[in-house]
Length: 83
Image (cartoon, helix red, strand yellow):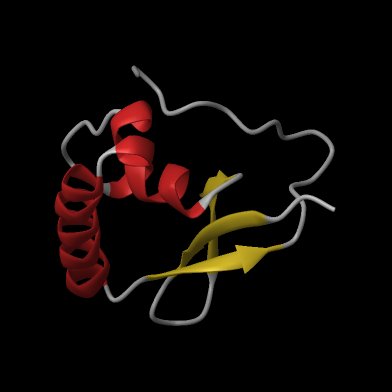
């Protein structure tokens, strides 16, 4: 069974346009700067910088990254636009 992740806002709603296969991919969708996927997996210091930027956005917006159910049939998961 595949796990999907998304953003839950401060009212408890899941935001479907942020659905991804991993927490990192969800984070890459909301962090304003570009973070390379490969470097996130191999470099601890790069990942720490990403986590700091991600936590800043999550705190500012009052969001959380949470597990969610499978996307509906008509909707495909897409890579981060422009990356």
